[in-house]
Length: 137
Image (tube, rainbow, N blue to C red; front, side):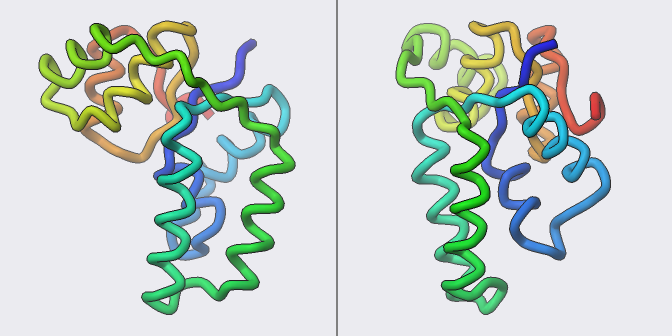
C-alpha cells in the first residue's frame, strides 16, 4: 500500500478540533503508517490556515507550534516536480483552482490516493480514477 497525497483541508482537521472527524483521524493513522506526500505549496497553505485560525481565536500560537512539530514529525515528502501541462489541463477540465489541480496532478502522476475534504477536488479525483480519502480510511 502507498500513502496518500494530503491536502491542507485534511491536515487542518488534525489540528483544529472542531474540524476533526473519525474519518480525518483514520487518514492520519494511514499517514503515520504509510507516509504521505504533498505538493510544495502545502507547506505554505498549511501555515496560512493556522495563522488565520489564530487570528480567529481558534488556535493559540502554542497550539500552532505543537501542531507543526507533530506534522513535521510525519515527514511528509514535498513534491517540487509539478507537470505544468497536466496541472493546467486538470484545472481547466474540472474547473479547479491551479492550487487544487496541483494536488490532483500529484495524485495522478504518482498513482496515490488523495486525502481531501474539498468536495469539488474529490469529485475531480474520482473522475480521473484517483481513489479519495477519507472514504478509503
